[in-house]
Length: 443
Image 1 (spheres, one colour):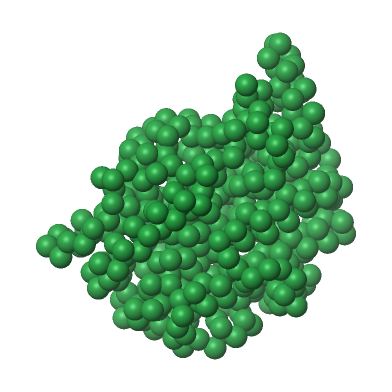
Image 2 (cartoon, rainbow, N blue to C red):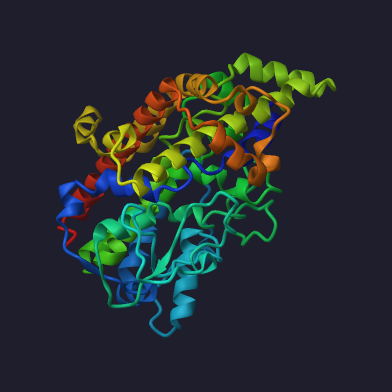
């Protein structure tokens, strides 16, 4: 019996991205962290250089991760044996790269190019922009804020820039269409998509970027598919590769993979990624679903649209605020919250269960207050009218929303600043944990 599955199958595809562009926030979160700020420049190198040098250690690492995932992740989908990464010095670099993508079960379309996303406070005006299609397999939407420049092999680059750029990278198509019921799936053994609409491409990445770990026993019983999240798997994969890269002298890829791991941690700090519907009780979800089953779908449709709209409003409000401050080189509540290292010690040390038991639990608990702040802080038209659907026409409503939210409501400001305080603290704690486990200075 899964009475809320149809509701969430419609609800979640519009919420596959958590914070819009992670990179501007990560520049602020790490720019004063000594382990990052004081790290020596690293040398950019193509991925295949790292793979060719460390082929056997990577094979051993991925085998160990597979065993750990099978032991620790209750709903894990075991990796098919045919996808196992093995050392083979005779194969081409292209085949070696493709083998890594298969073993990690990342999209074959993943770019993993040499690039940076410059700090919007310090835009690089000397180099031409890099075509987004060379960096991301996802066509940028009307409101996309990412701007890319190319790196050359052998170029010296600051670890902060590598890390902050990579913090946004998993949204560039790494996790699209990987399930057996997705169009053109690569046969990775994940089974059917557990939540989200398998026919909507961007929604197919949801189970890799969301974790509904704290909905409660009744929810889990009625909708067991929603307990299947692959966030922890991605964190483990990227963090392990980062540590191997640091230990083996490939510091560029150490910082790069660390940023990718942090992306999934940061996604879980977003309440709409850790709670199925922060603005609705389980009773309301069940009632809406029951009515829809009886042919009266208005309540269900309204709930779906409003949850999606509120998530979109929060993301756009936060993104616009961060970028506006960056372009003005202005420090406001968000910047101060992102840098606030005094928060870091409030949480337990980094470990296997940190993403689930600390990050997602905190975000789930913040869900109702966040939803209420969005409703109070944005024009009612955007957050309380189920007749307005952002997903249907983002190009039209995005600029209109930006114009109508110029007067920032204090309650929404405070809540966004609090959430970004969580974002910064958990990002630093996770990075410290990775560096410690690497057992060697990232220099």
